[in-house]
Length: 423
Image: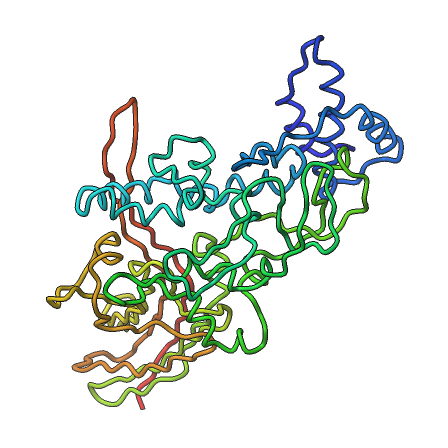
């Protein structure tokens, strides 16, 4: 039985009579590109292989410049289908980045704001399309950029990436061959150093604003050899290329979703919240809580400085709140005059010092002793709730009109509750 995924793919095909042969070819490719989610009957598999022999010409890889991800997707269908919905694919086009980029241009000028594009539209590193006139530039962290990287020099702060733009593509599959382009083996693509140039940023004031890579470098994960890709780019069973292009056995493939803080379940799996005890004597109470960073190879939270986690500990007399304490886990940055910076574009340019950093390091268990006074109750219940928060704004465009809209993201990570009895 053909899966619903195949049917959906077929609905998109051009079925006009003059393209019937082309449709048959695409039918085969559509079926085989989702082979990891369905079992085809032997007869259907034989039909698909027969139709595949009528395949069209190979995709046209640009040997003089960047190749569009759509061209890559003609062969690497499963990978492209997932990647195009990832944050990497939307690194330029998403409204949050567009708002920050516009604010940067307004405050600092276009020349200084261009630094954002080196990671959010990284093909500008070769060709300098800072006006984003070419469609491939607007693809964000597109296929051809990552697979044109042949080396990374982290000592070169101006541009750590070394690129070979054109027909040769670099990737981690040893001894891979392609009829469409040259393939160069690159184990760099399996190491954290590959991610570092865009996930580690030091501004002109010498302050590390983004430190995800250095946080990992100092962690037990790095010592054990566990790389960024091991968590954020896990392998699944599937085909690297469609069967109509290359008849090989299914293997492990990375679908390039590259999930991070936007994956709620991943964030929830990174930390552990516990109520480890309490004391209640007279009109004073103490609650003991632990928060452990058990599942991320960097600080919790990491990345953009505006991301924070918040622990709220509340004691109640029955259903009535008596008192609460709020404990944030975040990095707070200030400018040279000591003013706290609360907008991301200003943090990247103006931050000069870290006022405080209460984030939880990889493998660290943060033990908290939270005190309450003037308790007048005969019974108490304690709640501990841990949330992940991010406040920013997004550029919205409707009917040709632009406007900035506030964006507030907050979701529950963990919660625990206990009944307290006086000593």
